[in-house]
Length: 315
Image 1 (cartoon, rainbow, N blue to C red):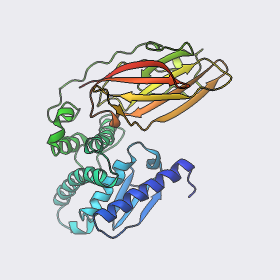
Image 2 (cartoon, one colour):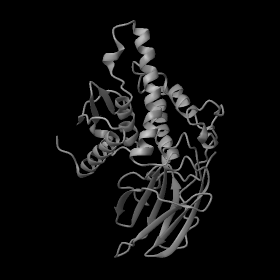
Image 3 (cartoon, helix red, strand yellow):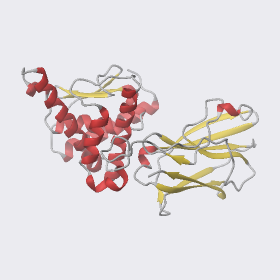
Image 4 (tube, rainbow, N blue to C red):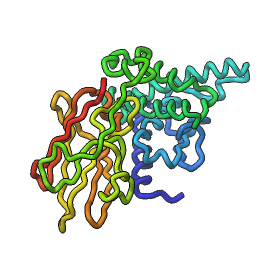
């Protein structure tokens, strides 16, 4: 199978995470097979081998899938141990295995990545809430051996009570509110910009469509000032610049409510049109979720301050 450069990079990072896990937990290495047709939600462990879907290699929650399946291996969850008892007993045992693998997977990310525990837990939540949304909209079914996604999420969050200050209000948490807040949709804007080179500079929940131009405002997403930590998957800074002979150097920094600059890994999409150029700086919600409150995004063009854009991550 031929991989794209981005997939090659993802595959190397997967193998590095697995190798570090094998070392830390002092277990023999097992094969990692990457292919198109994989059971589960992107990964599967059985018979002392681990298979991973190609599409997961570039997913923002790839490491969650890898850590969860490696956790099954570390915990000795081998299907052969289930025996041939009644289906209901095997179902119950597999459900417990899945719950334990979620919690162990968070530990693996914390140790082997290494990643702060709150971000590891947030990445697991991000993937699992996506599965929950697919389930409630009838786009997927509950595989044998799993509980409904919302129940699995509640169990995982309950195992990390030290993070209750930011997890207790998340959708599917045992103490979550019954309803989610309504988020206002606003027109594109350049509020907060200091540079006339910006036509628009604002925050949204997704990037513009490929080939979007300023002549077609409907190609650009609505502006969002408040973000729901359960509902929204991305916080995206959209910058639409006036054309210039030399493309500017754009620097973007993200600062939480305490004023701390967070080392965000950004995915940048670029588009160009005859009359304007846009850039979208996107940060996955799992990197922001543990830190609700007011955020500031600071932008500079060619090392000159060009604007500050505020938004809120709702509690």
